[in-house]
Image 1: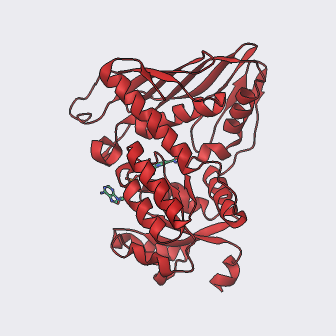
Image 2: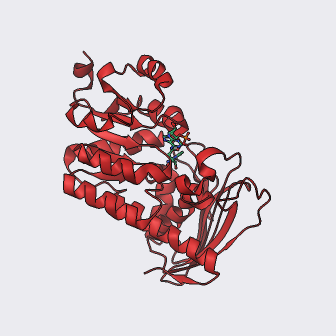
Length: 335
Ligand code: NAD
């Protein structure tokens, strides 16, 4: 029966049933057309019954971190989605690749470029596809930023502004080893992505500085706020900020003949956009459903994903350059 209903759909197993899986991905998987929630991998036995009941998950599709590798024998699972703290992404993507299943890994892809290289190599060796959970590539307002910028609708971009900050951070996000850094790794990555996809260019250099800490005990291991400036090959500069205490959410480009911006630009919903010619209007979508459906289609059609591991690696490389610039106070070139 379950098989009949889903036979055209690929089965997804979520690894890590924290806030993002619970609040966004599992509900989104109820709206997908090409994949469905088939399995779970959790270290919390107390969560299993509720998830099984709520999402009609078979007992044989429930795993823990010890028996996770035996997913290789489960025909119900086609895609493994890693939704763990950043510092665990590399280990679990490499393990997932060995099961022969295709993989989605949450952002940031990992905490070092070396880890990204291992992840990409493991997927290549196993012949599986790897994509990163960059949901905004499937969101209409952000896609419009890509179109307006990359097609130079308002002419050459001269400058950008990208700020993303939130409050109420706790847990592993404050632990350097598990998070890889502070707000830059968690929310600043959206600013970097926004600047990259709006310009369609790769930054060539960066300068950065750490903001003041208002709570030195809480932000003992990671920055509380970071400011950085990216330089693009056409001379455009991007003024960026991310913070765990200053709330902000904007992506704006100034071009030769006008401007265009999103504010808020990075949320799950309620994104709004304007240009120097007026308001942008697009339908509200379920970003995560579109993202997962696109990956399922990429697997089915054996075509590349628009958000591959290589894109995640490039972001991690630039994030590391931003931290180097912050730590040294020097302008760091990105090779
Ligand atoms: P969370 O803390 O709510 O959940 C993390 C899960 O990992 C929990 O279920 C926890 O039990 C499990 N876990 C396993 N080993 C752990 C360990 N050693 N320490 C801590 N937790 C451990 O976090 P989250 O907000 O769900 O984030 C998970 C991942 O998803 C992160 O990489 C984050 O960047 C990403 N994320 C992406 C988006 C997005 O919009 N794409 C949004 C939120 C989170």
